[in-house]
Length: 239
Image 1 (cartoon, rainbow, N blue to C red):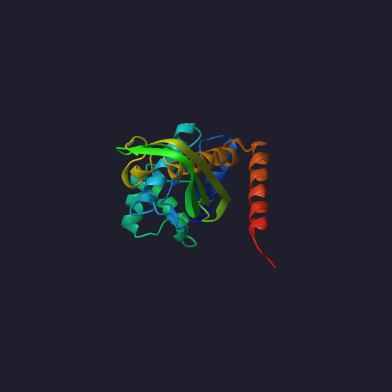
Image 2: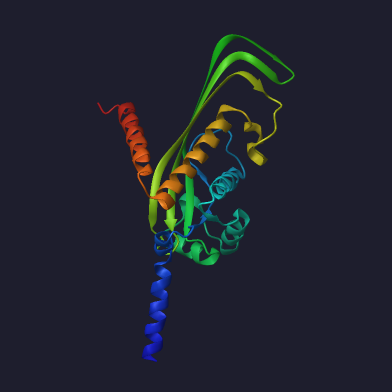
């Protein structure tokens, strides 16, 4: 009996070390992107946008070939069945439970914390049939607070604020419907849509660097983070 107990403890210990050992061996991390949460005033956020962003990020991560990405619908079904909250609402210990149910080693959670857009007139614009040429310049800024939850321990192993920016102007094809689908279809080729894409690509590059490459590429992201924090400090009026 004592031997069986020790054997069981050894197995449990081996499972607990799975994510770290997998990375050490160079295996692809098994990840699941859960529903994004919104804490911004973005007018384009509605309905199922949180899951749409999760699906888009899953596609970006899968395209790198560096991760094993679980299907969004598989994760969503587990969350619905178990009545578990997602994204920023994951309670302490819940991440480990989701990981156990889905087979994920890591859960990727994103919260849109800021969205800003600016439209300035440049004069001389014309519009006909939904197609605008010239007349305005548009900018959009998006910030996403990213967390990577270790599905074994339930702890946050990686965290970062990722920014996406985009500019637009000149010709705007209002009838264009390629690219985004669902609730985000109206953001195709808009500065908002471009800022979303920019943020998702930046998240993908960061996660590949931090979780897979684990080399000097982190110097670039540390420098970006310092610049972001410096801009934030400069924008605060502490007097």
